[in-house]
Image (cartoon, rainbow, N blue to C red):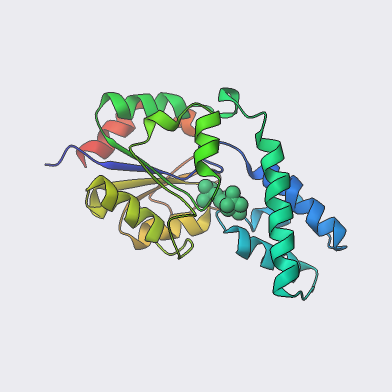
Length: 219
Ligand code: B16
Ligand code: MG
């Protein structure tokens, strides 16, 4: 029995709720292009890369654009998004996350980040959780977006742990699919109706207790 597992965390929607900041920044771009972009539309962008997110928004408004314009909007969006992150601190870590990170550290488990975001490091740093992570794999390190399992496979590989001994915490459907394709244990954080493909689903980390973590380690 192998008692060291890889616990891989998604970032946005799992450790912090940055979806609200992504929304504000994308909404500015959408407004400037006369595209109606709602909170519901924002759900489509969860776990999706920045480049793909812009394409989805342009698609909502049937807007075709040159690569030059797209590049300009991508830069504008990120600059605006970063301006919301300036004031981020420990208080933005989602409920229950710290307790689980501490438990995993105490139990000497492998802890990794597996995120599509290219802004992952500064976010982990500002929210005070960077030191919990043995390995960070983010949007700067992978060429294939979720549901491709690349980001999670890379994280497990860097931890030197078999994918079958890895557990993924994810809030997006594409992320759950990626974990399942990698043959990892998938734990959905959010709504059961949306994340039904996950092996386990919890509304948030406050519902994850030590017994559950123990059962994953012993699996
Ligand atoms: P950035 P995750 C994803 O992070 C977000 O869910 C998604 O909405 C965002 O577009 C993507 O990161 C890229 O983020 O613009 O910061 O590179 O959920 O995979 O942690
Ligand atoms: Mg996410």
